[in-house]
Amino acid sequence: MDKKKSLEIKIIERSSRLIVGAMLLLSGFAKAFDSGAFADLLARYGYPSLIWFSPVIIIVEIAAGLCLLLRINPKRTAALSVAMIVVFSIVFLYARLTGKVMECGCFGVLKKLELSPVGTFIRNACMVVLLFFVWKFSNYSNRETRFTYSVVTITLLVGSFICGYSFTDKAESRNQHPMFERAVSETAIPEFMHISNDSTYLVFIFSYRCQSCWNYFDNVKRYYDSELFDNITVFMGGRDSLQDFYSYFKPEFALCEMDEKELTRIARTAPTMYFIQNDTVKYVIEGSIPTYYMFNQNYLIN
Image (cartoon, rainbow, N blue to C red):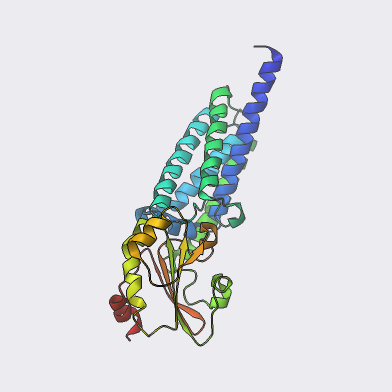
């Protein structure tokens, strides 16, 4: 192999390793600063048993990023990272198709780095390709010096502390939605509908591609027969099955169309139901829409 080709391979390997390593490290720490929210996300993905395992997942991601940046067992780290990315991509695809989540939550508190579902899969595919280059062209590991041990130990300890602190901080309110008992003015809802301080509202969030939304939509019709609410608003996201949806349900009320990126600003999952009274979000129901009778019995009757 001539020197020019060898140099090109070295540049490709180093660039790929540093890019993916930095992304994994950034992603891990972004989730560590709100590991309670990441635990919630795992539950909404359909894996509530992994809630207490979420800090371990975050630390593994941080460790993988560190190993790539410091060239510690790059081949094994690349293989582990590919497996991790592929598994998370499959889980996200399933949760997305079933309407359980609106976004992957890959970058935790750094919401501005979140991409659309298509963008997420493209980014993950690019990372897998870069990791293949690392696996293919990494011929050796750096010698593990005292400096390397120090950097790894300190970084993992700091990550573990942050992760554990934010996880504990959320422990008591993990089952409580962030919009519960909040003033509507502090949420994004007023950007999409008018809210009066002295009125009572029901807000439903659905997605056309969400199987659960189709299952629960008939329940919404019964709420329109009641005179207990001043306003009922249904927000719909995505247009994949719009025609089939209208032809099947034939709704006699208006549906507010939104793109799914807007939908994520007012809901973490679909379906979601908000009960708003006196300018406050009194109740939040995620993942299902109760019948009017059950809502009246469990939430409105004291």
